[in-house]
Image (tube, rainbow, N blue to C red; front, top):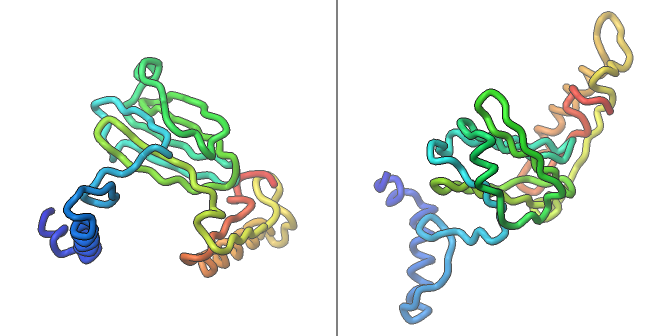
Length: 193
């Protein structure tokens, strides 16, 4: 573990930048972020976690079609969340719903717009925030394959139009995605358009 940190160029660069700032500031400690420093979590929503829940038991699922982000917490129950409320910044979140089934507690976050989530974990705490895609990407591309859900479109020789258009849209999405492009589809094939 420590050897990885010593050999990882990104960590070495962070350490060099930190040392440079430390020397430039006359040896005074400055607020910094990175692998050696605590993050500023003032813009995050805090979801408390029961003691038995580790990071591997928390799953985040984004659904841009419905403007939802689901946080599933394995091993958590409703009673814990009656006593330990969510707190923090709700920026980008318009509604919060809760549910519990089969040993998993789910927090459903309805977003104000199309967002991606960023999260962080600390023992007993899960932090999440919504970032509008317009702040993350230079270009936003929306592909509409049409049909979906119960509407198959035209059907010829057993081949459904919705299957062809979705396959083409998924292939195009893969080719267009890059660090500068965010690509979204108006359907994932299962929802009615």
